[in-house]
Length: 350
Image 1 (cartoon, rainbow, N blue to C red):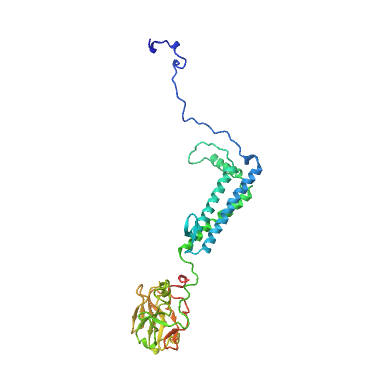
Image 2: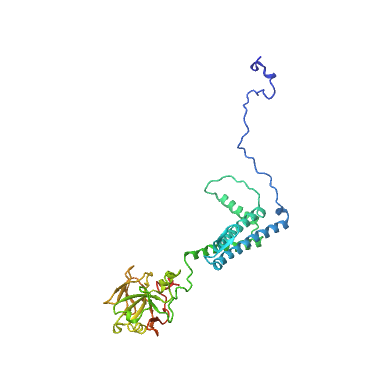
């Protein structure tokens, strides 16, 4: 006899279908509900809560110290200082210290906030139904009430140590970003105020590399000079010549209009900075009849017979003049450094 011929009453109980019923599988998307709330040790033991509070405060304090260390690193370590740190090997002291201190500052703020939330803030889960985007007045009131309750449960008002150290950490961390502005350019310092020119330094002809003598400079000629002792193969030659390069011109003394220019010259030989006061281009175009020099970059024009004042173009002020004389050997020498910084506008030159 086949199973289809077995009467229903003889089938096993689990196989007997109920007349008029349809089998339905369990709903896989049923709401399981919220698990029972289990209190934490901090909820029932105030000493444990105090320990957590001190831990969070310690992390915020470490963040403040790390931020101070970040700022100090900018001041202490030069850009080119290399140190050996195991296991990283030879690294930049500045980059390593900046990365380490900034990382600690940000990590400890995050870790402190997480530890605060997990141990001291309320961990009771609250379920709420979805609502329309535009909230009803009752909903708005409920949100404000929930916010007030959350603020109360966070113990923000009672845990003053956490609150104050968190404010300190958050106030100091942005200073790291302010310090990064230093990388926009070198610190001004005073290195652009002075050049290699000093009293007694001979003028060296940049073509012959020999000391210049008055008879070497003809009326209407233009000669370029640099300080005695500066070598072209020196590692800082370009930096130094960019400040110390000179134009040497000989003008009939009666044709020199500016009184100070005449006094700082030697028998009509005048020495002016070769660096344009607009953006620092080297000047090399000289017109003998008018004693004008032209900057090839932006056409600033200077009158070398009248204190090298600007007569055309965007340059902001006259070319600095170097006071010169003759030493015992009959060579031209400087009688000091430039009295004002050479090159572009003062605020750009430090």
